Length: 447
Picture 1 (cartoon, rainbow, N blue to C red):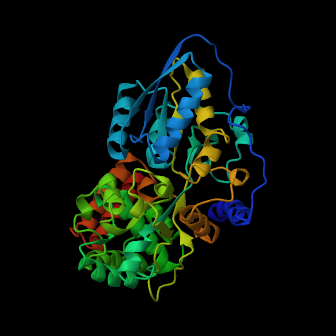
Picture 2 (picture 1 turned 90 degrees about the vertical axis):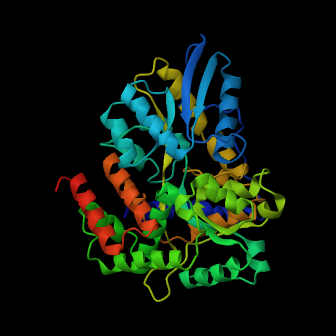
Picture 3 (picture 1 turned 60 degrees about the vertical axis):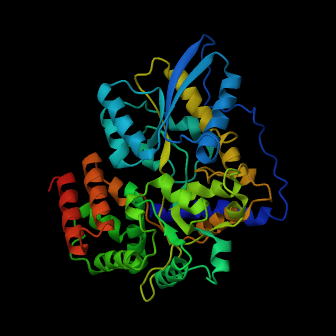
C-alpha cells in the first residue's frame, strides 16, 4: 500500500531527530553548493513572473520562499523576478483567471491533486519535468506521486503535510486541563474554557476544507481504516454507511458542545490562526505547515513559547487509533510550458527546492517538514514543537492521503466543499450530506 510505503520512509528519517538530539556530527552541504538539476542559462537580462499563495514574507512558508528567492537573485543578478502574492482562496480564483486568459505566470505555486492539478495538465499549462533531474533531491517515496499524471511529472512538492492539533500548554495548565485525547475530552475542555471566554479549538470553517479534514479524520477514528472514506467517495457510496454517519454525527456533537469558536463557520484561515496566536483559543486545528509558529517572532512570546502539538483525538469506543493520520504531499511549484523564459523559470524551481536550500532551511529555520530526506540537516537543538511533529509522524501507522474534495475535478471540489460549509452550519444532516456527496461523485465519474 502506497501510504505504508510513504510512512516507512518518513519513519526512518524522523527517528533520526531523537538520535541527533544527543549531538549531530553530520556534515551538511554549503549554501552555495550547486545541484545537478540547475541548468545554465544565458546571462542576458531576464524578467519572470512568479505567483505564490503566501503573502506573509516574514514568517513561515513565506519566509522560506523569500529566503530562497533572495539567494537566487544574488547568484543570478541578471534575473528580475516580479512576484504576486495572494492567500489560498483568492489565490485559487486568480489562478483560474490566469488559465482562462492563457497567460500563466512563469512559475507558480501548484497543488498536487486531481481536482487542482487536472485542469493544469488538461490545458497543457505546465512544463513536463524530467524525474531523473531530481534523483539527488532525495524526495521521500511517494512525494512526487501527486504531481505525476500518466507517468509525466508536472511539478515538485514542497510540503509533507499532515493534520494535527496545536495547543497552548499554558492555557491548558492554567485551567487544569490535561492534553485532550478523546472527543469527550474536548467537550469537557470546552465547557471549562467557555467560562473564561476562551475558545477550545480555533477552526477556519469558512475555508471549508479544514472542516472536511476534521470529518475525514473522524471517519478514520470511527472505522480504524484510513481508506474507508476514500473508497466510498470515489465510488459514490457514502450514503447508508453507518460508520460515516456516526462520524458526521460526532462532528455535529463537537459543534453543538461548543468545541469550536462561535464564529467558526464564518472565520477564514487568517482569522482562525489569529485567535490562537493571540491567546484567545487554547487550540488550533491545522496542518504541519504551521510548525514555524514556535519560531515566529511576531507571535507574542507568552504564546509562542507555549505552542505544542498533539495527535487528532480518538472517539471513545470506536475502532480507530491516534496513530492513523491524514497525510499528503500538497503544495508545490509548476513552470509554465508557454513561458518565454522557461529555462530560467526551471532554474528558479530547481533552486527553490534544491536540498541545500529547501530541506536545510525548512528544518533549521524551524518552518516546515520538507518532502525530502532531511536527516543530514538535523542540529540536535530542535525545539519542542519540531519534536512533537516528528513524534506524530514517527508513530503513524497509516495515512489517508489527500483531502477527499480533491479526488475528482474542480466541479466536484466546489460542490463538495460548499456542501461541507452547509454541514458545518448545520443546514444539512448526515443523510442529506452523504446523499448529495454521492450525487456529486457519480456526476464526476460519469455514472
